[in-house]
Length: 280
Ligand code: GDP
Ligand code: K
Ligand code: MG
Image (cartoon, rainbow, N blue to C red; front, side):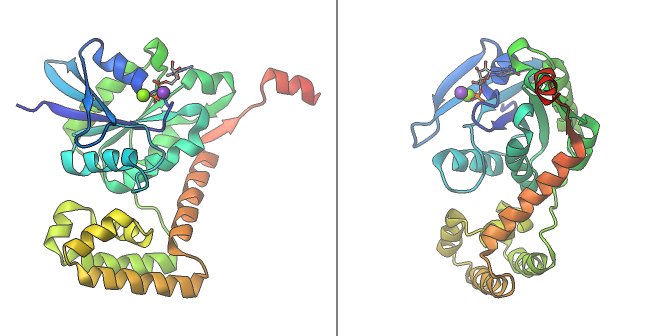
């Protein structure tokens, strides 16, 4: 019987492996992802009579189709369907790390954020309003210091609870009137294709196609999803004419705008003592 699977996802050096070690101790197995030489680490976690399989996914900044690592992470989330995803975030580098977080949330993954390197953030006087961040993202956020095992118990309890509740709504970033209009059109056509709907959330797929995701385009071509691809081409042309830029660039811009607003709302930074001394 397959135990419940929890995947660890995060930017390189966010502390994924440290959290993995905290969760699994010595109960680890190192192998390879099928067909590639990328290392795959798995381990077991026992909690209140349950056994969870923890999978450490390759470190990645995004979930596009630009590298083997990104594809492994994204395919694992869609096709292996882990019960939960722990998104390890470097609290001292929040804005950059949240790019991946928003992608996971748009995919509809069942996410809990481990706000790791919390000691680093504290040392640099970065103050994060955790309830506000959690509310804006729509998922639980647990501060951790993986190297000292701090916050790990809370993290496990939160993930176990999240798995039980199974309440995940994909995050909906507003991409602006023009793009939303094209996303709606695309979604309608995607929803007529039962095979596609069974595999991917329609809105996510629509966004990725406007972003020129090559793997998905190739996949749709192979499966003969002609109507969807035709609408993608039309929408891209339309957006380019109205907005004077590639849809891909505008979508990235809006996503960064969303993250920027989020950080402004949830993070304040006081000057460190050294900075105050040099300022005075
Ligand atoms: P990964 O690349 O995401 O797997 O990150 P690692 O677990 O290898 O951690 C990267 C570096 O950050 C290592 O030197 C860790 O010892 C360190 N590290 C991990 N978590 C923390 C933390 O919470 N606080 C601090 N200060 N360092 C950490
Ligand atoms: K590393
Ligand atoms: Mg690692």
